Amino acid sequence: MEANIVIGRLWSEGKLATAMESDDVADWVLLQRLLELTDINELDATSFKQAQVLYPELLNLRLQQAKPNSLTLEDILADCLEAASYFGIENHHVAELDDNAHHTLQQAFYRHFNRFWLALHQLMQIQAGHKILVDLAVAAPVFCPDLPAYELALQRRSLCHCVEHYGIEFVAAHLHRLRPDLIIYLAERLLHRSGELQYLLQLMQCWQGVAVLASKQDAIHYLTDKLSIRE
Image: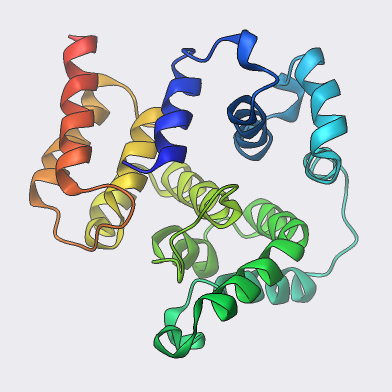
């Protein structure tokens, strides 16, 4: 299974010791916390100070989310559409691109990430059911994300929003477009009650889609193990 899912699971289960705070892995875990914490105020004082040094732009971005914005809906939608275009394989003619071209597109996405993140956050506040949010949640990214995987974080955020907005039925409605790694993520962070895990497990038995970062069997094993711990 892909490294950032494994490390993310260890962090979410509290199995990464604070003694690792100076390691590259621990720095990456802090990055994931900055990306995925629902409320940035939940960040402890030590991690906050570390984030000021390591990830000042991302920390400021998360703090900006609580402030009123002056962007128009037109501006917000334009930024969201630009973000969504990165996930559209037909927009990049991927088969014709070499590794350097892939890297160039990815770096361009990262340069504009803060703008994309803020725009999506604002769209969730003012038009929670907008189609762009659904499109991002169920998209197949053009590239298999490497660390720090900002594009994966953007998709996870949209997916959690859609499940919170539409309910767990959103997973069933878009099952075959949701990769197994996204099902695992939902079970880790959002849908972790026994009834929800049973529902996801039943859905995964029927899943027929494209696996990228984790296989169908990975998800089934994970959900089964999680249920056995709860029972």
